[in-house]
Length: 248
Image (cartoon, rainbow, N blue to C red):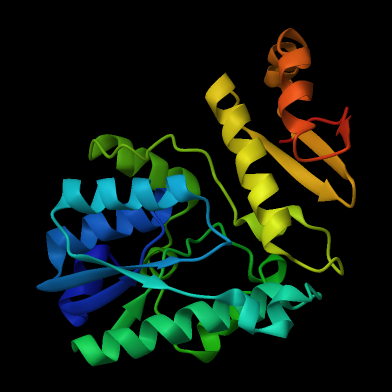
């Protein structure tokens, strides 16, 4: 199936939109082929502010109506207790909220940006998508991550080379309770590294420690900026560790 065929069958759709590579390309395709599309962005403490800014920018570029829904994950102990199914409960919460708003707005079909490269065994949140009957056109059409980046570049989309960025809660080890303070520390620290020129990295919250994980080509930049990084990150963490194994 092609995306054009999917939107012939589903002409009026809502999209759970993050502003990332996949959902941006899907929004672009929906704008091209669907009769009516609306985007929903869920704003919470789990998402950094720059993602909302990126999503607004893309929606404006594509001339698509985007609604912002605010969500408080901290009312759900299944999420903040951070067990093995945290992602499932989080996705269930997010997509149920979007479905309710989309139904109010008159949109019967909700889409998400899951692609053919996403492994359901590694993504427990995908179980929530199945249970809620969310459609994933990129996956249904067999489009992989590399396909989507290539097509995004051909379409001139600004997200073609945008690095993957998972939610802030993924920086907190399973079993450690999620707090606003931990999420805020992660966001501030990672934004600082982004502004120094790092792209492919994570800062893991290990109790009183921050563990920095870098791509192989970013170690040199780290050691050039070591003192600056330590000074800034010690505002949020008592101890800073560097993982000597590189990220893929």
